[in-house]
Length: 249
Image (cartoon, rainbow, N blue to C red; front, side, top):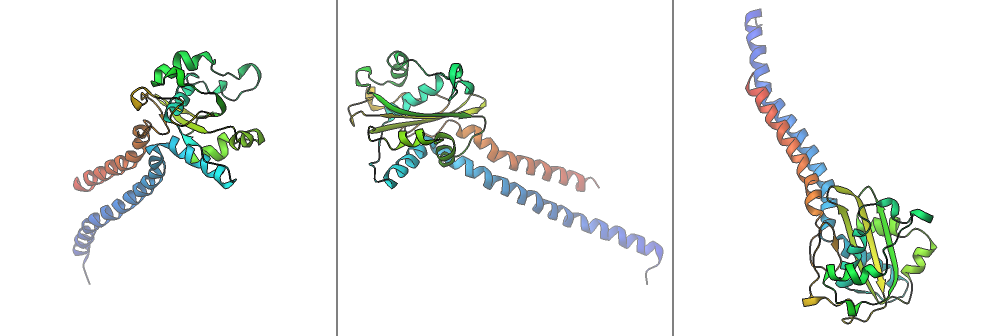
């Protein structure tokens, strides 16, 4: 049986021995939380390789499921789709609205602005046979954007399954500070290697945003990667605080 002084010293020692164990357990909690957040962030980061390519892939899978031919992915047309987005200057209200709020770039902009900005030869521009355009404040992955944002009604299905299309180009873009986010798909009846031909065979890359067939990662990857880093920074800061707390005892 320990007397009171010995018992006090024993409890004091036991308390100090528990400090490393408490620190260890708290570290496990913080890093488990961080890992879970990183996994969620990875789900977003993976699509930033080029979400516009994923839009085209989803679109063609839907067409072939209906026994329709897949469409040729034309990077020149896709670059113009990105320019089409930029014409809205980040104004979501002008996209898909009814009446006076509904806006659409002038046909002359294809010749005068979109094609030159992309390096597309003006004399190779072909007829635009359809378009999908959507905008919202939150970013979603391409399959969801295609199924729930771009495809909204029977008219959307009519455009998707039209036999007039031969080529497609898609673009995805946020703004310099994140949202709102835009998705655009342009269809054309042009001929492969003869329509939307690029000077030097390579489209001019413009940021922010990305377009299909560009062999380029989406510029939004950097912003989204901050979501990936954030949980680890928080966990690291918390861990450092724990070391200071237990080390100063």
